Image (tube, rainbow, N blue to C red; front, side, top):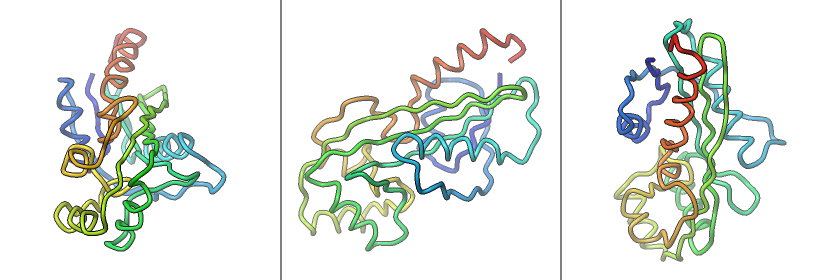
Length: 192
C-alpha cells in the first residue's frame, strides 16, 4: 500500500510520517468553495471529497489517495484560512474567550472505492489581549491555518485551556483514525 497525501501542509506531512506508512506527497490546485447550506462536519467532508475527486491522475491498485480539509466552527459559522492580517485578527478575536469545534474531513480513495469520515475536537480558548493577538499573528504568520492558529505553537501553549477530542485533529490530521481506516482497507483489499 502506498499513500498519496494530497496536501501542501507541512503539518499533515509530518503527521502522516509519524504513523510509519509508505507515502508520497502530490499537490494540485482545487477550488475550496462549498455550498452555502452546508454546516460543521459537512463542509470539511465535502471539501475532502472534492479534493479526492479532483485528483488528476489514475490511481493504481496499490495506491490510496488521502485528502483532508480542516475547518473551525464557532458561533454557527465557519472559519477557514485568513486572507490577511486583519482577517486573522478578527478570527482570533472571535475564538478567544470561548470554545469552538475543529472538524477535519478525510477522504480515502482507491482505484475502486471512496470512503469519507470526519473527526471533531472541541477547543476551549482563554481571552487574549489585542497586543497578544497581534504578537501571535506577526510572529507566527498563521495564514495557512484554519481559524488562524496552530495548537502546536505559542497560541496552543498560551491560549488553549483544554480540548475534548484528538489533539492531532486540531493540527489538521486525526492520524489515529486514519491508521485504523487504512488497516481495515488493507484487510478488505489484500492487493493494497
